[in-house]
Image 1: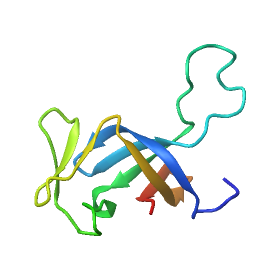
Image 2: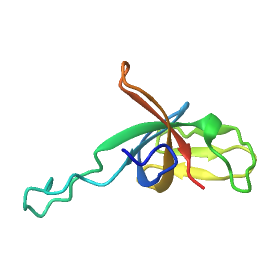
Image 3: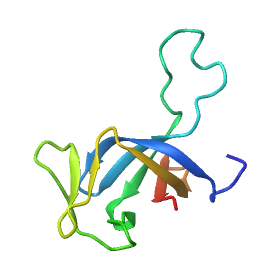
Image 4: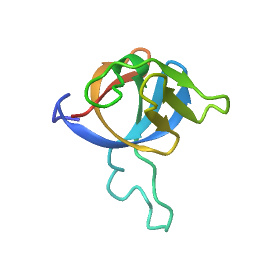
Length: 107
């Protein structure tokens, strides 16, 4: 995006691993739905590493993935991050050669 790395995006958790969450974000391209009734997914996806996740109030937390791989749970605070959950993010770094986008929490 031309608006820079400070732009905040609404995103959705699409995958979880012990190292963090995959977040789909961004607005679909105009006309991408093709006139159909199906909603188009966001056009970008990035990784929000657990080291950049806060448990609220800026607290650092130790995150653990549940047995089903559907929830990252904070060990001390009980905070959680679930599949399908909305999460506001910012782009922290883009590695075009590897096709990676690293995200940070917005706000």
